[in-house]
Length: 240
Image (cartoon, rainbow, N blue to C red; front, side, top):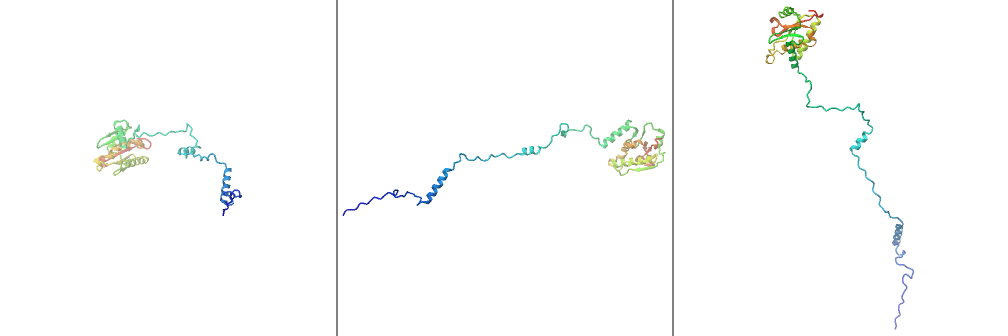
């Protein structure tokens, strides 16, 4: 018995179906839709350039900004400070008190000062220029009555000069003529040097004191001897 030939069927395309039809694959439909939208978006030809970076301001910029409202000085008001020279020496160096005393004492003894001075280890005496020698001898002999006295024992040089100055000026204002100053013989000082005794002629020959003194001389033994001096003062009216 003869076989019947199979009848070839129509291709699937002819039946009205297409491969991958959207009916059978909804996800593919969505993908096609997205691809179509992407075609309509123009691609950027160049990427956006990054923002330009600026350098951070330094200290110089801050200083210029801070000084922007400052008014400069004029040439006349400008002053340049001089740097002192540490090796420079003063043109006139200060003289110590001891050197000043020795220099003044040298002037007194040499006769270049306002008083004539005679100075030795034990005795001192002095007077203004032209002083009457009879009065000077009377003073040396202790014939003028002592009207007041001051004792400088135990005082330092600076203290003694102040004390004797005040004492003599007060005595002058009171109208006293002859006073006694006890300076000591220096037995308790270093090397037994009579420091106050050596300085007395200097103190009596300078400052306001020298204007009220006529003469002075080492005292007699009964008044203190070489540890004291008589001082003869001017009269308030300037008479001898």
